[in-house]
Image (tube, rainbow, N blue to C red; front, side, top):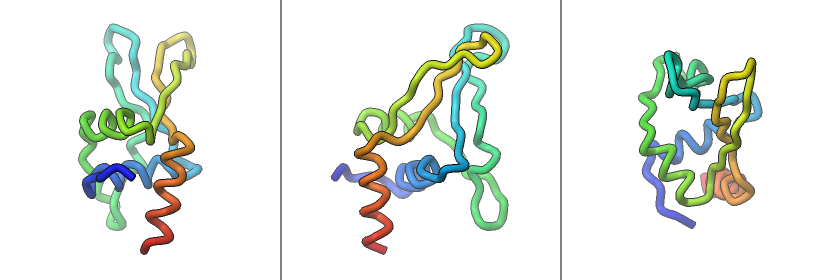
Length: 97
């Protein structure tokens, strides 16, 4: 199991929720790198967590998260979701608590 920081584990657990839909715009232009789906990335008091791209990159590099290119409304977006290894990691976190 890779060693993850608290922030990386929080993002991984959040991505594991079935209601989470997270994507980043990859179309060069006005909305380039616009992030969709972070409205639900909040703590119990409703305060949004800070999102850092390096956290997502670490999860992708550890093969816990993967992405696919989608074209909603003809605009290129990269949709992120857990791999099977990511699902196992989250399950093991839940068991250990």
